[in-house]
Image (cartoon, rainbow, N blue to C red; front, side, top):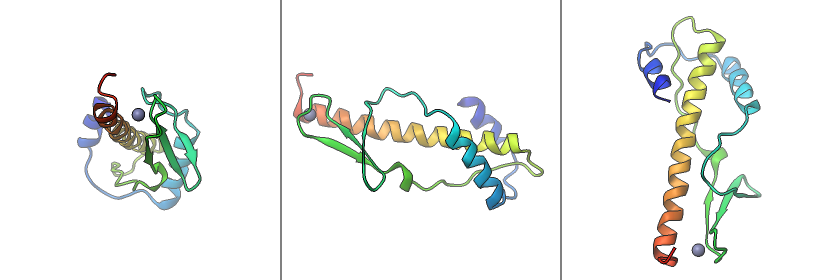
Length: 119
Ligand SMILES: [Zn+2]
């Protein structure tokens, strides 16, 4: 991930890719396997909600709506290639996945601390 950030920060903040190019790169991104994380597998609730249940099944859960998160800006160099655009979008997706993972992990950790202090 460090490689990506170094790569991105070295690029000039110039033109954004066209919607078609973004769509093509996102489509590629969707075809990639999801990141492996340490999170428990969520249930998918209608409305695009990923619901993370307490591992002890006490009834607690934490909801996330991954599809509702803004994409944010993707920076690419002037005259970028499809590979560069794809790499920039991947780096951004990884950063968002990392934030998502941390958010869910800290919600679960906080729940355990208050409801299951013995675990
Ligand atoms: Zn619990």
